[in-house]
Length: 365
Ligand code: M6R
Image (cartoon, rainbow, N blue to C red; front, side, top):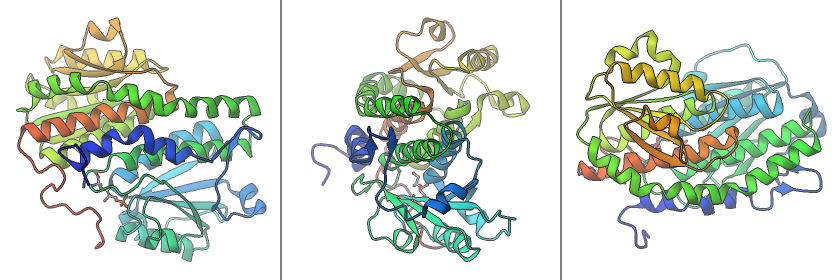
């Protein structure tokens, strides 16, 4: 049921303040300043022994895994590798026995993700699933896991699953961090910041009117670039995927500084670049990448912090998002990119909820 919304995708975008709150419900523990999960099923010994994490997934879930890589490195100091499930299943990578596997999947039925998880289990690694669909094959076959509790996602383009997966990965990084080097004060700060997240998402949704205007200006373009660094590099990939799959526009996501190693040759006045440039550690670096694009006469759409005057001196168009700590920026900045893809697809008359050539879950390899 779409309610008052014209498409499932738009409804699911607007559900995100609640779905992210649902992912956290009952899992934040103030007494130990950590997160708790009912079903990880790891013994204390396994938990202590873990020294490496392999995440495996496809599509949007793979992008959430890339966010997870930054989160686990920063908050838990655990080395992470993120592998496309379709690649991992046919490789035979040397795996340290103390590695755990994390399969990330909305549907729990993606054939490649299932096969990759089975392969990891066969090699003797504990496998956790971060999954939305309760009772799905991957949820059943995993040794343990965390449900998203996001409710059914009907639109083929994954939206609320991505923000919930990123939220669960943040809580897992907090949990592993607290068994290692994170102090209770640091843990408590993260808990407080997580609690403020649904409100920040609500505010981010307030950019919809800005996004509609921008969609109108650029809907005719046939090529887009999406650029971000660090935590926002995976979001650049995700923004490009959203635009490709529902509006059939060619879009590429890149780490912003990688542009000058080739892709900048694509830049011209008809190729907009969507920059993820909220305030944070790499702000100045991304600003100079933005200037490089402007110097080649490429239009710049910036997703940035409210009232950022410095960005305004370079960007042609701005979409503002509320300030959150850097490790939560992927969740907040994904919102305008979902809306941008949605509005452009609608303007181009595309079937938003059921894009051509795509199925909601890919159960063949
Ligand atoms: O159900 P899963 O999360 O395993 O699905 C993985 C991908 O097929 C999925 O994310 C796909 O890329 C989406 N259509 C992207 O919006």
